[in-house]
Length: 261
Image (cartoon, rainbow, N blue to C red; front, side, top):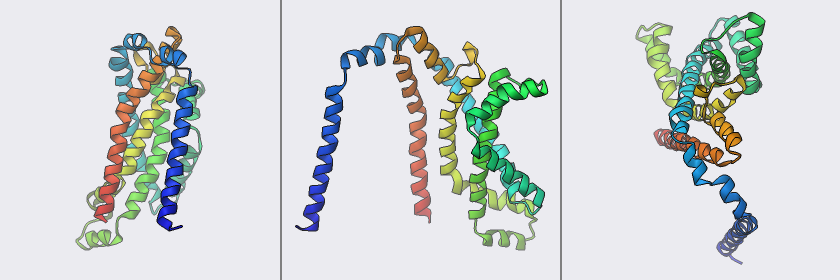
């Protein structure tokens, strides 16, 4: 049997298996129970407009705060890790390894409850503000490694050329290295943004007032009140509306970078 014939036969079998699995799922599902419990249009309508004007808006705001805070703190950590001063490198490395190794939920819980009790301290914004600080602390550790990798990916010849023109190390980093590094790391940074959008759902552990609820918390409360899972489906669709364009942007940026090489 020719190789091309075997390939077509294998592909045909795989397609047939896939179709059989889909058909089995469709036939075995109890659509009489699924439709009213997960796709109830009446319940879905009751979630509007609050799910947009409150929950989705808060999700976007929390994501923006956590991303900007994580970016600024992550940049500082990345520069510390690349510093010639040994204690700075140790401190940054220890921080990054610690918070990359801890669950984000545990860190948020700690900043929302343990830190205020231990230090008699109230975060700006109350419990949600404390949770956001925890999210910033975790995201900064991941973003720092991304920035560090981008800085190290800039050709050393660029630095040497800048220094030969009389630029000092700080000005070289600001005007030559960082702009090129951020162009390199734009796709992974966008991916971090997508992860942060989903991680804002962890802020529920800090406790939220009605006006502070994000998409997940809003959907959970609506599910409890309505005894129906349709609000979860609506929230899931809104998450996809927010994240899918970003994931497509990541793919296009990666393709653009590959062509640039």
